[in-house]
Length: 371
Image 1 (cartoon, rainbow, N blue to C red):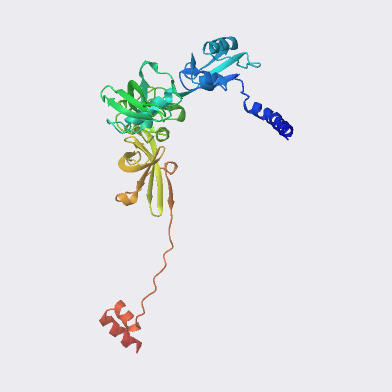
Image 2: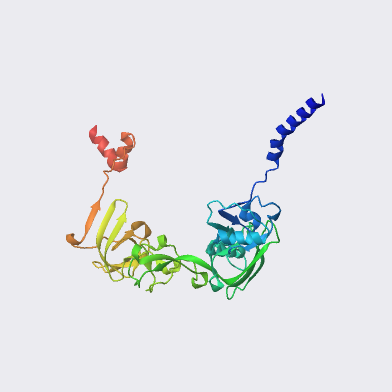
């Protein structure tokens, strides 16, 4: 009985021994071929898997924010041995690539943040119209990847006379106090204006090739700036040089009639249309009222510019003048007549008709002769 019991125990021990051995197997530390880090140091746990209690031990300084470096395997193993980390499996790895993550804020985003902080403050307008120039040519900024918050202005100063600003931003951090960034520079409100591409004389009509669109400081543009679409086809009130911003006050409708220009005078009343030669006493654009001289009658008339070299005199606006005596070659006319409809005679008695035509004495004599 005792022998049977011992045999059974031996068999159970033999069967259970592999199971215990499997549970006690420790996976060896294995070197990684590439890693990414967010802090300023590289730790043992970053370099190898299954680092155990040594995982938090720092071994290297991390690369600069947003950059990548390489570590030879031999150098890594040497550093790990110094930290009492041995038996690391390297496999076919020849070097370890280390990349430090970062948050990059580009220069354009910084300028936008400054413009937004100044928007509708200190006499400035919309952020889209504020031109920001940072001091010292600030390039893109890299921050720890943990700084995930938006740029929030914490302190803002602005000088309206010089356009100088001094702004401090705070950026929320997932693990520590907010990061702070301070920027200085100039911020100027600009406006989109049409400018001349070359010198233009007053008499010239503006064409598409004569006008370009630029942004200029608001202080340089007095009055209301004109858009490019509004300037094309218009005429300048005065000669202007290339690069000069165009305001609404600088443009007018083009003159269709010039002073002392030979023009066609059109005289219109209902049913009558006359044209004759004339000379403009003044310049005028379409719709302007100007004085013209009828060269045939030497009379000065007032009319409206209705086309190039054309002035129309409306009969309803003044007394009807005598038609000018001109030669047939110099004058054309169109007379429209309506055939009058005779009115129906009123119904009257024969006696009343006779009495209306013949005096009473003659009426009695005529009646006696008829008898």
